[in-house]
Length: 639
Ligand code: FES
Image 1 (cartoon, rainbow, N blue to C red):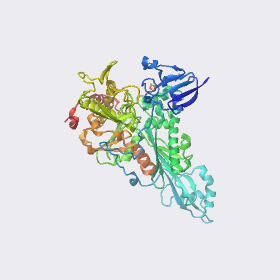
Image 2 (cartoon, rainbow, N blue to C red):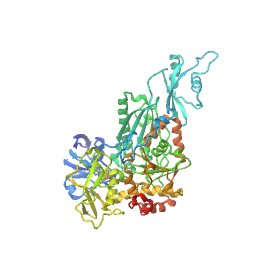
Image 3 (cartoon, helix red, strand yellow):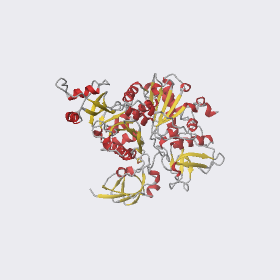
Image 4 (tube, rainbow, N blue to C red):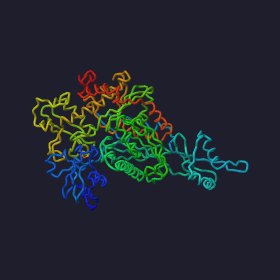
């Protein structure tokens, strides 16, 4: 096959490829990050690029208007390279810097301020990988126990580990090591499947620290803590966006990519491994250590991310009856996965509950100590989906409510993730409807992120531009409100002010998608309450978690009916609890075991099951109004 050179603008990144190579996949290989909400299905239109020179083979470009095609736009996911070509990636199609919660970002002002979960004080240090200093009795003719028995006796002097194992490589060096150091030795134990193994022998008084990593594998972002296992302190934090986003914005997009592309599973698996290894590299460099100083790792992610991380086909997750390959994941050797830490180290994934409630949620329950609370607590994690937990120390119920990625910009024409140039806050003049806005990094606006969308719906409804069902006021005449195809749109930012070459608008369809998303989350909350014969008043505490929670304006979220209308002091923002729970598990074997207990204890409410689906539909329909069809549920908002 002929080899061609593709040059991506504006960064002038060049890459060679064979004829027929898919342009979106090639961009990912070249490190050019292009939005791909639908995972290359050709339905979202977010991957538009402009062919400046050369030719591509256009496959199904159906959703692009004739005008756009005329201007040289193509869907990257539906274009193949057939010549040398120069491609411009316009600003609205680029993925750029994200707001990522590493675990100490703070909200401010009218936003929820992150609650300090006091992890460092709370955890009793007993890491999954721990080093002991031992002094063994020297053997003699009257004390002729073997070297291994002698070692086990000393390990068990202050602890009870009857099922210790020692792998062959350690056995091979045991005799010479003990004699070289005159029966004093350092011994590292690694927890494996409820037992421990002797993972490593070291010189006595070895002052080098052992490190571990805790990683949150989010659908959108990755966050990593490098932790000194001897002190429990985080010594470096790294975050990045999940490169799998090149293949789909949400888990369904990624699963579709795996299903529809030969080698898709391996591509997504390698993509996540590569992203994590880059974070490890950065953290190790910052701390001035070798990869081999990192002796263990704990990962927390949703069920699809866990499957892709392990290289397991996630296809059944999206098919009725939604069965994952596994929820409880045995430890895996780092080198089997290609994770760049000490070879043969154990890598642990926190257990999930079901296809759409994964280890990120059980990790969150651990981090917030929800399962120890007296108070009836609602835990909400809104990311590319909405996962909910309700309960206390006596019971835990969980569900996932298919909120879809609207709050991360999916399905919204000018929606985007919280990145540079995203509008996060609006202000509107009630008389003239002139709009002011603020953007992330004060960059020219290129779209609206989740917090901006929530704020936008709240203020458009407040000033009467949209009614409670999300429709534009049919009587309203204003230059910003105009007809298009089969619906209306409202201009938020005219082209002259925007960082892209067109007006930024919100359409009736966008608003419908947002109301569906918020409706799904609120309906999920109502369904859990119903199943426990409770009402909103019984909720004593609401914990808002996840990368999105940090930026939600509480009043706006209540005004549109996304969060229950409860007093502000009942809400706490708890940050990236997936990462926090992973760190706690890394540092405490007891906590690690407790996550498994938590996963077993949680009752999963399948909202599409026969006995739930009709009630859920009723709740869902009612919740698609602003704030709800039943205004008595939102007394403070409707006062
Ligand atoms: S249309 Fe190309 S990724 Fe969605």
